[in-house]
Length: 132
Image (cartoon, rainbow, N blue to C red; front, side, top):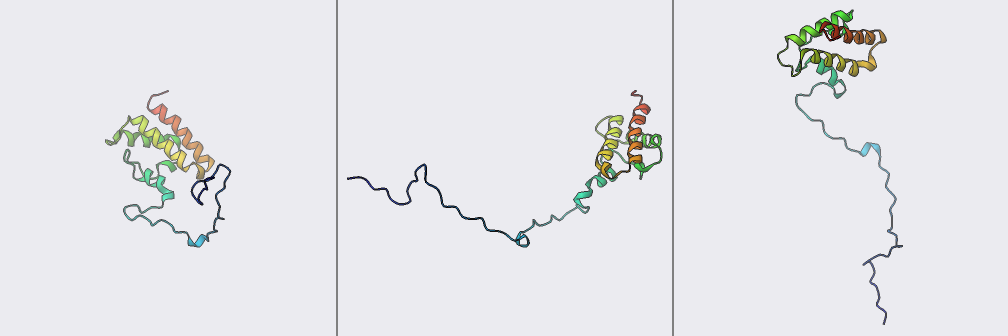
C-alpha cells in the first residue's frame, strides 16, 4: 500500500507558499522615536557651528573666519593654535585642520569670495608657519 503524506508536513521543491499582499500604512500612523533629553540643545543640523564655537582643541577668536583678509585669518588661527594647551597635534596641523573643517562644513553656504579668501588663508597659514 502506498504511504500517504499528511497535510502540512513538508513541501516539495515546486510548492509555493501562499503570499499575502502587504497592507498599506498611513503616514500618520507611523511612530517617531522619542527625542533624547540632555545637554544637546542645538539642532542636529547645526553641529558644525557648535564645533567651531566650542572646539576642544582651539579657542578661536569670534568671527575669525569672517575677517576681511586671508592674512588676518591665518594670523588669528596661528595665534590660537600656539596659545592652546589642549591640542593633540602640532600648532600648524591644528590650525589647518580647523580651517579645512570650516571650509568643508560651511562650504555649501559660503559666497565664492569668502570661500576664495579662506582658500588663500590656507596658503598664508602655510607661509606663516614656514612650510613653503
